Length: 188
Image 1 (cartoon, rainbow, N blue to C red):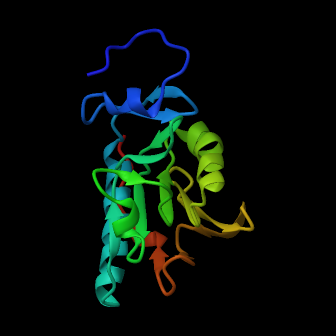
Image 2: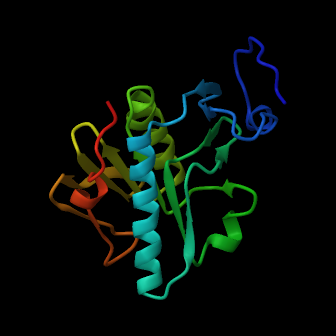
């Protein structure tokens, strides 16, 4: 286990010495701590994963879906997207104990403690390393934005509100019903 010491820069090796389940991500050489997500956030993550898995089962397709799994981009950046998807053709190449390289789809659910990182720093790294589709879910405004990678740059492909559907390009035919996604009540 890594003891917390004042260090200016951390690496993926430092990160991997943390205790399993430690509430950190490595973002641009900084260990960023965040508390466990609230129940509404977790319900959304479960629904997202379940929706993707149900879709894959329905079209008899494989792939890898995970929640909060380490994704190693480089020695400076190890993230835990709220939900990720790796297509069937790439699973054997990049998924072992963790994901080594860019998943095909990364989904982040905003919260007050992580919004800056999800909207700025993590988005830039996802873009740089070729995550084909990046979805940002805003549980407060109850909307979602879907970015697709075009010529190495993210472009806003779709923005959907609470009663609309978000349509994936990485998973053709997959539509996420936001009214079902946000059906839980927000904790008080």
